[in-house]
Length: 296
Image (tube, rainbow, N blue to C red; front, top):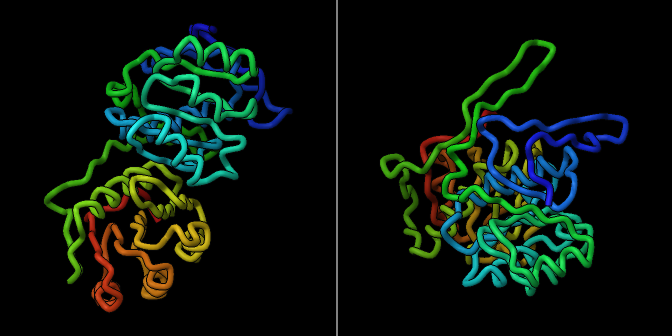
């Protein structure tokens, strides 16, 4: 295992770019079985951002670069892993997988050597399998419950100047969290809504997340138009009775698309009277949070 004191990254975003990673006071304690690339670090960090929302349950997050691919909670880590794979099997082929607990050999046998896996710990049998199959693994020694304490200001250097922004530590507020539809959501729907909202919080701008039974069936992010329809197409039959979370207000056209996909509940930053009326027309429960996590 490589202890991270000062690790030179062997490759940048592209083969012709160089990159490096340096430890500072906000660096968590971790070890890796092999050198990491620029994209590896981005994928692991994004996975940890999401997994920190679910540190006290069995959770699995799959990522690719700065994109969230799938998230699932389960009765066990194995159950969550199976659900996460089912949520986006195509992206899983090359995904980085981040888990909330100790990983055993049953879990790692679901991986290919194109995957990388990060977790708080690995059993000896799991390590033996990973090393014999040349699968990179990263041990996160810092407790996941403390992960958010290590989030620092987001810094981006541009030709216009250096942008510095505080990390997104926003949480749902019971004073602004409101059911605005005639149809009242069930407890299970609210649990799925909070689950989906926490994922949308960490997805790229203009995110839409579809989830049911604490498993994503679509995580769409960064699209400029018709993102709800794209999300419905991605989820396909798994949109039936599911919850949809959006970090943007939606239109009546979007509500019509959700109704066709048989979405049962929506969680949004805000909703116009027309959108609320449309949701009522299709017996869709609607919750507003009172704020958005992204600029648009």
